[in-house]
Image 1 (spheres, rainbow, N blue to C red):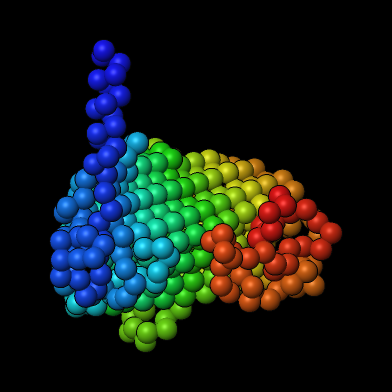
Image 2 (image 1 turned 90 degrees about the vertical axis):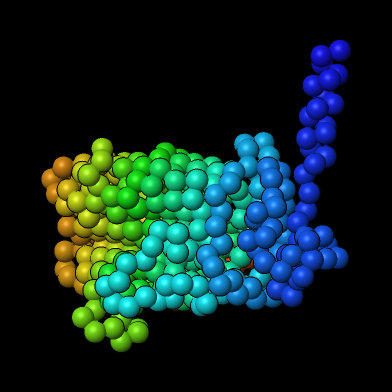
Length: 387
């Protein structure tokens, strides 16, 4: 009898999950025929297992969308576009877009989507523009983000912070984010900063034309896994900021005052950035850096000055400066380009990034090409699924 009662309770719980609809022109209570007019209303109504479905159009919230509740491991809450319709969330009317030079941005005003202590959510196919951060997730764990585009925001496009673990971000495009409040000092494409938490992953992401760095792991004390991440043209003053402070690295992999962070960086590319391709930035950890490529950056390709990292089968070529890399003696290096003769543009099948920069494939992935694939050598990053 107890067995059948348990099954019945489980069935009733599953049956309570519902679809909640939102439309930019909605005035109803969340049904498909009478959708809500605001995303926040749908978030407030959602419980574990529910699906918030956004109809096509541009949403213009006037307050930051606050996500402070949680789903469960087996019944996450989902926020997504309806049937891959094009959804834009424009944060231009939010507070802090932007505040003045050197003014502070209150915590709850960070992010078009401000996710704080909100766990077990899934986000799909959203475009976030003109906000004080695009997505800002603080003390938020076990969340999944897919096909998020965040651009032209007034701070970092996508940021994880605080006690945050087991978050997965795939197929992210984050570009042209800038920070007038700081003259370019802190707006990155993607950041996981000032906190700790195991199991965070960024995969098959593109980070470009951001005012500071492509990616920054400043003071995050746990390992972050980066795979198939492409960072280019970051750190240039496209907005005419006076006293410009942008750093311009592709991948900044430290600093940390916590236990050393042993990040994993695999099959990533940094090219055309204003400064360095990859830098440990003072992180004393043992980073695993495998099959990455730094090409045509404005400083060295790899700068590992503080860590006991392992660099294997990486390429540094055509970067400014004859050394190509700066490594301390505690770094272990094997099978890398700087250990195997001279390299130039003719060492690659192609130095044309147009396919990488183009539309993603139907599966969400960056399309494969010969860009920066070496001729006759099995090292470095690739967009092909053959390593």
